[in-house]
Structure formats: C-alpha cells, structure tokens
Image 1 (cartoon, one colour):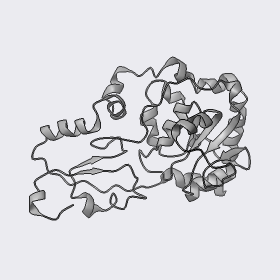
Image 2 (tube, rainbow, N blue to C red):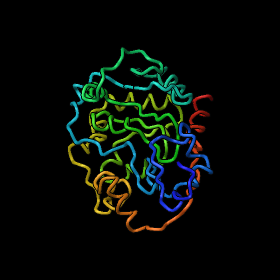
Image 3 (cartoon, helix red, strand yellow):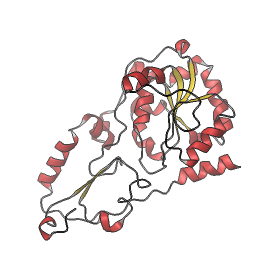
Image 4 (cartoon, one colour):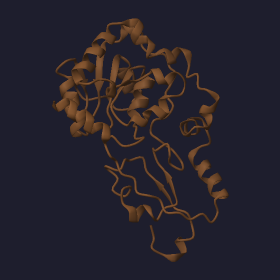
Amino acid sequence: MPNSPEYDSIPWIFHTNENPVFNKATPNEKIMAKFTYTATYRLDSDFPCPQFTQPSLSKPFPFEKKTGFVIAIYSHCENVRTLYMHRLMKHIRVDSYGKCLRNKPRLPEGFDKIQPLIGKYKFTLVFPNSDCDYYTTEKMFNALSSGSVPVWMGTDKIDEILKWGNLKNAVIMVRDFKSPRKLGDYLTWLGNNKRAYNKFLSWKYEGFAFPKNYLNSPIGLWWEGWPLYCQVCMRLSNDKGLKRQLPADRCDGKQRRTLEKWIRE
C-alpha cells in the first residue's frame, strides 16, 4: 500500500482467503489499521467469500458401489491433524493420497478426475491446516459434491454454514468423539449400516431445503447473492467518506489444543 497522503482519503479492501497462521498481515495491527473493509473467508467479514462454495446436488455412488472406506488428501503436514490421522490409522483403514502419511499413489490432476475417486469413498477426512474461526477450505466442497461424507476437524463456526436446511445432517464432527479410536469405531459401524449412512446423504436427493431467511445470511449471500465485486461496488456507493481502522485477526486454535490433549493421553 503506497504511503502517500492522497491514498488516505480512499477506502482500502483487505482481500485474502488464507488464515492468520499463514498470512502474517492479518494479525499485524499496524497493517490492518490501514484498511477499511475485509473480503475474506470469515462470515463476519464485510464481504464474505470463503472457499467453501455451494456443493453440487449430483447423485452419489450407491452405497454398494463405494469401494473405498476413508480417504485423506493432505500435503501440508500440520502437527495436530497429522498426529490425529496417524492415531486414527491404528484403528481403521485410511487411504492417504497426499504427502502426509501417504500410502496410496499420486492423485490424478484436475477436480473432474479427483471427484469420481473421492465419490467412491464412504468418508473423507476434511482437516484444515489450522483451527481458525470460520476457516474452511475447498476440501469440504469437494467431499460434499462428490457424495462422500465429510469428517470435519476445524472451526466450530462451521455450524453457521451447515445449520441451514439439510446440510446440518451432512457432516460428522471430530469434536463429538473423545478419541481417534472412538471415531474409528463409529465410522466402522456407520460404514456397515446402509440406512444410517445414507441419512448423511439425504440432502443429495431431497435438496438443500433452505429456509427463506437463509438468503439474508452471509453464506446465503455468498452462495446465491450478488457476485463479490458487485457487492463491493454497492457498498462503496453507500459508504462514501467512511474511514475506519480494522482490528487484527488472530487464530486461537482452541479446538486443536483440545484434540491434541485427547490424542496424547
């Protein structure tokens, strides 16, 4: 950002989809004080734009045709998620295609080739590299769109996205299990129980069933509202002369610390 007085009279937008652990500007108070608006993955951002876009309603592989059990695709081996997956692998089979604990060959390139592979697995580990408020990744979209049930280990604020309509019954939360063993036991049971398993995919057949007020929510506006830069233009046209300093954003990783304690006991 130029250090010139002429730039002080215009609004600046901080646009990123990286979390504070890997984006050193976000937790820096001096840097953030120069900006007027945020356009980030956070749902409480001025212009929310998370990588988790609205999943596809394409029909999943039938239960009987799912040949895989659990799939994981990670190449950044963050300590807690890697340790958790390592412990989970002691109890169930996890096919890891990324660099972390890899036991399968390299993935094909392109989502159009990866999606059918994910869809053949009953479960997908969706463990973001950091536990930061509102931080989600495209891996949640990939799992849901492919028809593989996501197993989520990340921000509790994922509830603000999944609370709408049938999506609230589409994801398994790691936080609900006191150990990797207990999660593994549950996945083993669910993976052998067609009726219980298919309840997690009912939204694929019944639709999202979003309530009317969903369209006024941050995720509703992102999924089905005006495009991002149209929102920016409309906001700027109404906020002429607005000047404010944004606070720093830090990642506390509260859930990760809890999970780390569980898996080290």
